[in-house]
Amino acid sequence: MSKTHKIAVLAGDGIGPEVVREGLRILDAAQERFGFSTERVEYPFGTDHWLKTEKIFPDAEFAAVQQMDAVLLGAIGDPRAPVGLIERGIIGKLRWELDMYINLRPIKLYDERYCPLKDKGPEDVDMVIVRENTEDAYVHPPVFQHKGTADEIAEQPMRYTRKGTERVIRYAFELAMTRPRRQLTLIDKANAVRAQDLYTRVFAEVALEYPEVKTDHAYIDAACMWMVKNPEWFDVAVTTNLFGDIITDLGAMLQGGMGVAASANLHPGKLSLFEPIHGSMPKAAGKNTANPVATISAVSLMLDYLGEKEAAAAVEGAIADLLRSDRVKGLKAGLHSTSEWGDMVLEQMGALTA
Ligand code: IPM
Ligand code: MG
Image: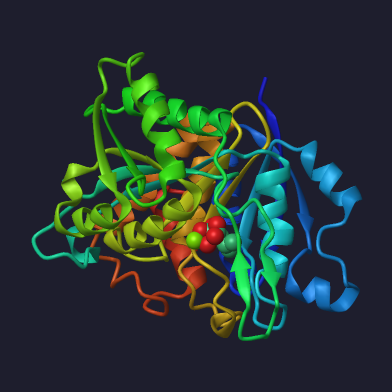
């Protein structure tokens, strides 16, 4: 019997709605071909909704979303709202309150021409960053003392728990076991942020259980350098929330830019969220120029998580084949319109005739 997956769709701000629209066209085609169905509920939350209603993500809807199987999110953020208010109130609320402790960010280059690095190709850029997603500098609200005076002090602590550290490290080891190279790099800054000694110790402890995995370590500053100089050294890497946020933007550039980088926010076995890693690009909103490939890739990650492995592989394969073909003029926004990208992926899947 075919399955029905319940999906909450939060298109969000800026270019979110148009990239999500293309992602959903691909999802339609995948379900038609692979014989499963989805029940989708679209939620209007984002900056426009907040400006109109003063509501960010009301409890009733939040509770309803919790009953679903997955969330597909477009983008959140808009300069008309106070910095971080809507981002923390929507993405933050989902990640933190629903304990989506893994932020999985695959960095895979499909064709040499999209890589800004000289002499690097697809064989050099194929890694997955496992970013911790619930702790670190994201947990505590900031504390400002003597605000606005010459004596002002602003603080926001970085917090790591053994449980939080261990579960993300364990996930990364398990993931490394599924990949041919079986290599895992711990990225931290334990030489300066001594609290991250917890990562050093837990990583060493868990490593004992995975003798087949080759382990490695890099401080975040050096990791940024190595990722640009020798990206081929990385297979799976695990890191803290804030460093993971930063280094995955760098990683996105290596695979061709924000137009193609996707991520999964996972609580294995529970409700998880899938999104492009790019922001909302308010200036480009509604222009049909944004590249939706990252969102389509997020749909593939979502299908994989939902157990629709064949469909996930078909969508990812279509993206890979398309990006390797000479139909693609480039990945920069505007070279192909948002809807044209959707058409091209569908054609590649055989779901639309050219
Ligand atoms: C990301 C984003 C978010 C983060 C912002 C929007 C809060 O940059 O998902 O990478 O910092 O995690
Ligand atoms: Mg980010």
